[in-house]
Structures are given as structure tokens and as C-alpha cells.
Length: 270
Image (cartoon, rainbow, N blue to C red; front, side, top):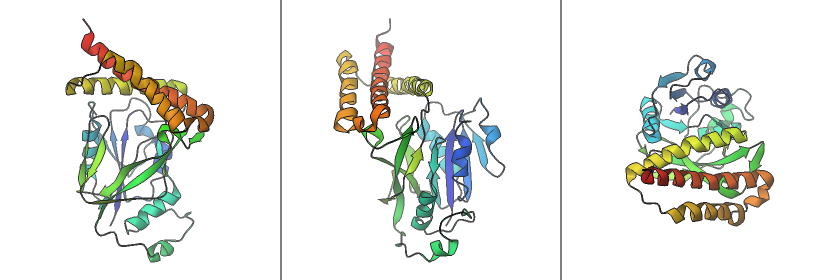
């Protein structure tokens, strides 16, 4: 069995090379690019399949397009600002019972050692949850909103589709287990980038809510962001991450405020 990696891109010139370097062990790498205007495409090496397609505010459709183009038995979804560590790569290879034709020569264990390892049969497995660790402003966040999260990012092709335009999830039919080693995530490496991302993403969320006909009261705009901050910073122990934890809690609270206030203004603009 083989593994295809799928990456969605849009102006990711700062991240794409590091991401791709961590995926060399995959049998196929597919990039679905939303017509990047920076140097993203120029940093992609030969041998990587690139498709350009407008996301049109629907990330599930964009991911499903990449899923359709994948030709391997297993498909791994990675964001452009994420990195697959050597440890996670080895674990994925063992979990899917496959030997990639491009296993890193500098890996800590030999190919023969991976092939002979006694991993359980996964014939009935359809997918895997993978934990993720976030590094913001150079610091690993162990608590707060991102301290204990996991996503289905690895699954057999044909086992399910992505659903949800902005908060998309991979709906898998069959058994889903968890992997131990995390994806390494490097988002928002500056305050400017963080604010830009919030502004862009909350525009999409507000528009999606409008199309859904969601109802939001004026009081929710005030109460929900405050509750979000208290939950992340106090109850989820975000304060233990120091200044980075405080910044993340404040900005995620602002994210909630921005999405709701934009949606409220859409519905009440004269």
C-alpha cells in the first residue's frame, strides 16, 4: 500500500518548503493551490502534482478535490504551515503496514527494522486521529485551546469525504484509531499575520452563517468572547503557557467577537 499527501495552499511561500521537506517519504504529493499570488508555486520542486482551483469559501470541496486526485491506498492531509516529524512518519508507515519507496535515508531506524516490526494488523481500520502541537511566536503551547487537539488526517481513500465549508471535518466510515506522535504546527508567526488571518477567516465564517440563516443576538457578541477567554485562559490552563498563552487566549476571543459582530452587521446594515 502507498501513501499520498495532500496540501492546500494560498500564498504559503514562507511555509511550503519546510512542509514539503517533511513529506519526502510519501509516494505521492499533491498540492491544490488557490491561485497563489506570491512565490509559493516557484518553490515547489518537480515531481509534485500541482492543481490550481479556487477555494470559493468551501474548504471541504477543496479537500475533496485533492482526495479525488490522490492515487494511493492511504491519503494524508497536511496544512502548508504544518510539518510531519520523522517520528510521526515512521509511525504512519507502521500503522498503514506499508514501506514507502522514499523513506528518509537519515531515519533513526533502518528500513528492514520498520518492515520486520510487529505492528498489529489494521485491515479493518479506515483512518487515524493525529494529535497536533502548536508553536506560536517560537513557543510550544501545552495548554489552552490548542493544548490537546487531534484531527482525522490519515485515512483510506474511499472511506469518507470532507464536510463543512469553513470548519471542515473528514467524515470517515469505519474504525478510526489514534496515533501517538503529533503533527507540528507553526501558524501566525507574527501579530500582523495573526490579525490578518483572523480578519480573513471571520469574513468566511460570517458569510457562512448568513447563508445558513443562523440567529445571533447582540448579547452573544459580548458574552461568548468573554466566556471563550475564561475557558481557554483559566479552565484550560492557558496561563501556564506564559505570554504566548495570554496572546492566544485574547486573539481567539477576538476571533469569536469578530465573526459574530461581522455577522450581526451583515443582518442589520441599512
